[in-house]
Image (cartoon, rainbow, N blue to C red; front, side):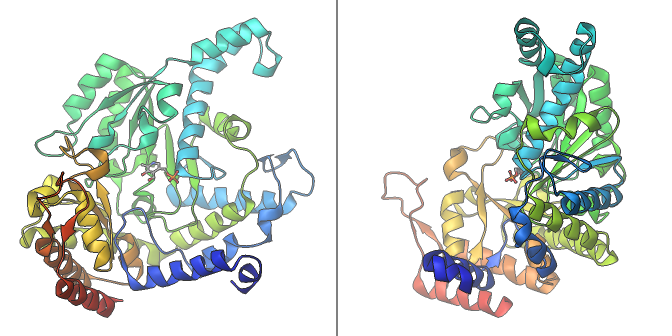
Length: 453
Ligand code: PLP
């Protein structure tokens, strides 16, 4: 960071502090990981200076040969990794990938047939009146995804997100008693709503999803079946989720981030096949501007890493560690939503277990050197800001090589710290992040955290 420090020492200092932060706290955030030096080197370089709107072999700029090569290699590696017919590696994030997918579905389901009727292929050539009719036809299509409180993502139709403006957004929920997906409920909602897009794949659902059953429901109601595997893509790549639990084998279109369990650079990915492929490749201009050439290079490297046999061992260990974490927390009195996990994350009901809100529990653990994030639970009485839950994930600690013993120690430290924290009931609301934690507890847990790293 010397070159950065010469221009902006404060930014350089923050980068170094972040390094020290990530080295001195146990990272249990389910959506984070540590990507390799090879990925970081491919990401942080002069490729950031190159514009390349379009796609390989079809660019709106000169001098794109090297970016063509990089993008093609990234897409080929993604296809091989996931067994997909087509891969689009330009989205800058998971949210972008979802927007590209939504617009591609609307283009192929609604726009293409309407254009064919008008005898035109390119919307840019339509008269103002025909264009307005086409635009109207693509608005008000229905999206059916999981609600935010049940573990869905903001981009799955949340009111404050553009997805609820692109679509008439509807939702299904998990069973409020068990926290589990109820496919009969999903089917009933799909029959009622008759969505254009049926969406599965979530941010905070700890169980394997039966994508084959979702496929049947989508077929019954004539929906395009989309899966957002942002969280568990690394487990799909590493063959820890296979058969009915492999979304690529069952969905029409699959979106992902590349930086969570998949352990690549921050970015997005869309996988598809058939007629949706052409529409997806128009991510620019539909949503995106110029692709991030350096990010695509880093994705190519990450996908190559994920094709190595070691990545399968990593994926299996992520799940194994999450199961151990759930068991060990439960043995110490932790109430685990759904009773366990099949993937990389564990939802701990800290309100039921320790009488703390998620916000309090998050702060307590952070003070002790354990970085987690609070998470709303199904039907959460404390709302999405304070919450009643924590989401704990094992990808980053697994990348560090931790196994059963270390995970047992982490569970012990989480429970020791949370059991010791006293919410201040004299304050106006127990929901606020105020609590007392004795100095000796904080110091003792911090010291044991240091021994883990
Ligand atoms: N989809 C899901 C299921 C996610 O959990 C997330 C991020 O947490 C996203 C999409 C958005 O990804 P990004 O933050 O890269 O935009």
